Length: 124
Image 1 (cartoon, rainbow, N blue to C red):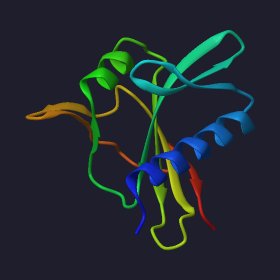
Image 2 (image 1 turned 180 degrees about the vertical axis):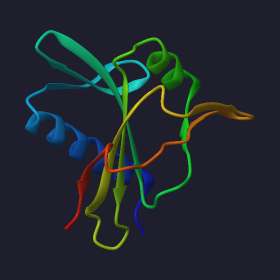
Image 3 (image 1 turned 90 degrees about the vertical axis):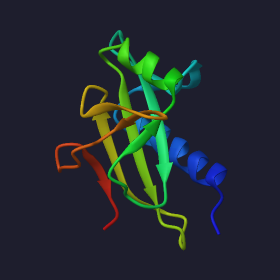
Image 4 (image 1 turned 180 degrees about the horizontal axis):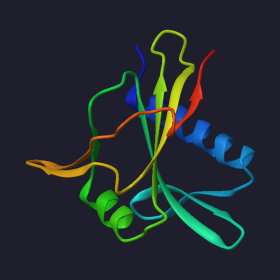
């Protein structure tokens, strides 16, 4: 069984490696409400990373995450899907915060439109 803490750590490590490979400087937990801050050519981007073991129709967000992401037009959400058995990354998606955000009774959720446009990794 894979623990949530392990899935989240794997997702954050994968996101850090991905953004570094794209030429960004990466800082972990540099903003309250986001897991990473990436910078490149003077631009700063808060990144919320969500690690999961399966693809759902929504991604839950805390009020703190929503506040940070809503107030920064450069904010992104990075979703990483981890295989429970192999503990390897199956898919990774990157979303702009404005994509399909809705309030729910217990908070907020992102209803992402997962397409090839926002797919950044797929295990071959």
